[in-house]
Each structure stands twice: as structure tokens, then as C-alpha cells.
Length: 353
Image (cartoon, rainbow, N blue to C red; front, side):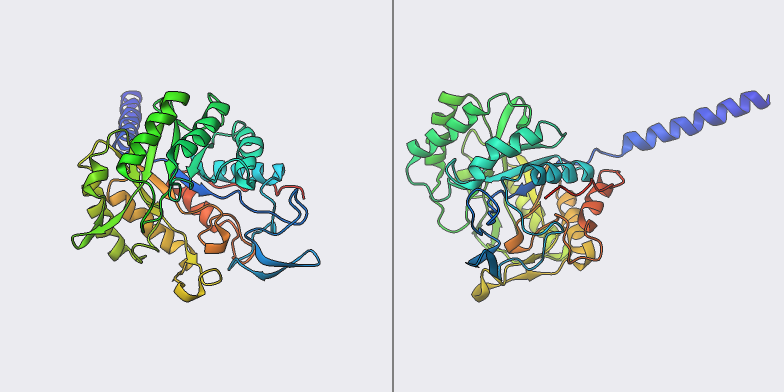
């Protein structure tokens, strides 16, 4: 009889565990904006880019970032540093990097193909283009040529992020008078896909209209867009508290749900752009992770399909989760993200210089 009761108890415990596990929905993917535009005097371009605005005898003056990276200023073409970034993301449960891309002629373009993509192939973290050219580009054929070119060169690469078997391209747009319109996007999509094959298009789009912030009707009716979202809450609308974010996100989500698009919502750990935009500076305090948690709860409450982490390493704007030497716990934000995914964060070894 005792054996029967013991077996019954074990069965009930197992059943309860399975029921609890089945009742917890999977956490949405986390895609982080990643920046590979950093140069240092030790790198191939032998200059400072995005770390400082001047150079005197090889030393940075007027540091642009409000905080210091744990490993110090680095060059985005440094293979070991890029590999470490991907290892950090993997350890934290970040699923992908959306890499700022301005074409192939600059540091970010070169680093994407020669450094970042090969490193991503060795981890679970995948990478995709965050195309920033579209917001300023009036010449659709030229843009289509550049974009289809890199998609062809990276076609089938194991490090590239795919959704539904298609390579992801995020089209970033400034919210004020961007060049891209529904008509020119359709031209761009048609030209790129004719040459490079089907693409999973994520569109950055938010605008103020009729007393609220949402997705303009013309964009909601534009075919070929797979996801709609936006970069952050410090340009078109400056908010950061949970009481502000929750209704704001829900209103935006309601408009996206009128389409078949996936919903992308942003999360910031902090913000301080006072060194690069002193006249229009805006600061969001990190509050030792409380701010990031508030964004996370609000985005989940709105039903986000994918969470956009703004950012992994945009140091001049101070929206970073990359470890900083200025924080009591350099890995504080990565530990929080790992917790969302039910992981215990273990930092990988620091990269060699």
C-alpha cells in the first residue's frame, strides 16, 4: 500500500510540474541593436570614431560616452572582442543582433561580413542587418543594389538570422520626414527580392497622428511587411516609466494587430545622450535595472512578439547592456535578461587585447 501511495504521490508531483511548465508561455525572442562603427588608433583606420570627437597624439579627448566599457574603447574589427560580445549575448539569452549597417564601405559594413557574421556562426546568437541607409536614401535603385548585394554575398550563411526561412532585414527610420514611403518601400522590396530572393522585412515605423502615436494607415496597408516596431521612446515620444509605457505600448500594439505583422517593442536599460546632443539632451536613469524591468513588463503586457533591446552597445547614447567598468556589477543588465530566459548568467572570459 505504501508503494502504491508513494507512486501515486510521485505521479501527482510530476503531473503538477508538467501542467505548470505547459501553462508558462515561452519568452519572446530578444533582438538587440548592435553597433560596429567603432574605430581606435590601434585599428585599421588608425583613428577614433564614436568614442571621441578629437584626437591628440593618439589619445581621445572629449569622451562621447557617459560610461566606460569594461574592456575599454575597442575597435569593431577586432575579432576577439566581437566574439566576446556574442558570447555575452549567448550567455544572457539574447537571440540576435540587429547590426547597424550603412553600406559596405565603412567600418560597420566591413565588420559585418568579415568579422561579425563568421563569429555568429559559432554561437546560438544570429545577426541581421539593421539598414540605416533607407531613412536618408532617395535613390531606390542604388539602395536596392547595395542591399541585394550583401544579401547575395551572405545567402545561406549559418550566422545570419532567418525567420520562416528568409533573411531578416530591419529598416530603421527616423520618425521625422524619412525618405522611405510606402511606395518607395514597395519598389525597394520588389527590386531586392527579384535579385536576392524573399526577405523577412521588419519596418521601423511610428508617427504622431490624431492625438496618439501609432502606425500610419498607409503603412498598415502596405503589403510585404512582416513586422512593425520602433527603436525607442526618447525621440518621437519621451517616456520611460511603467505607468507611461504600458498604455503607450498597448495603443501601438492595437494598430499593429490590425495587420498580419509581428509586433516589435523596444526596451531601454538607460539613456544619456547629453554629450552628443547637449541642446536636446534626455536622460533615463537605469536605476540598477529597474528601468529595464519596467520596459520588459510593459512590452510583455502589450503582447510583443519580439523584444527589441535598445541597445547592446550604443555607447554615445548610453543605452548599453554591454558590461561597463562604471557599474558596481559590470554585468548587471545581462544578468537580468538571463533571468527572463530562466538562465543563470556566467560571464565568459574577457577577450585578449
